[in-house]
Length: 193
Image (cartoon, rainbow, N blue to C red; front, side, top):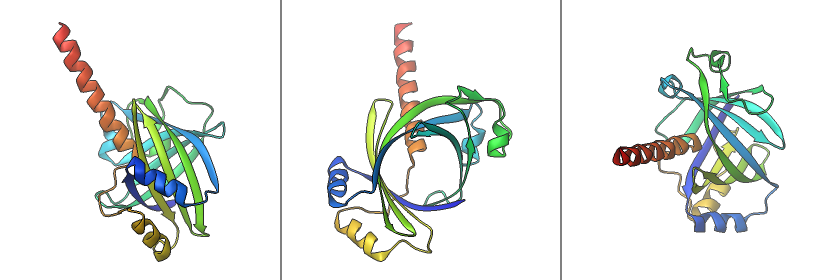
């Protein structure tokens, strides 16, 4: 499935304004358990693999990012059934199409997602995500038409949302936080020796 979406990080105030400014169809908690290889082959090929847990069901999701450096994200996404949340995958090539060593579970992000169908081809997803002691806010506009509806985009712009900056997805934000925490821990260990 080809996924097209605009994303924008929000401040807590912008998040609350949007959350209170719409009537949402659903609100659910989902967990994203992220996997990567020690060599970084998946990241070099702009591939993200996770196990998403929602409504007590687990599914492997693999995204191949097609246009990095743009606020418009276009990804080829595939899903596979899985039971539970594995600690690792030794058959990652089966899911990603890329030969790697073991794919290890490197952590989890928990998202409270409010969603609303704007029309039959456009969904608004408002996310509050917690990971590694951090919390951030994001809006995603997912659509299957050529462009998202002008009326929706204007309404969000009027609420302070900008889709101009390069979008940084949840996985990239998670990796950056993990890298920062790892470097800080290494520095602390170095001082103790």
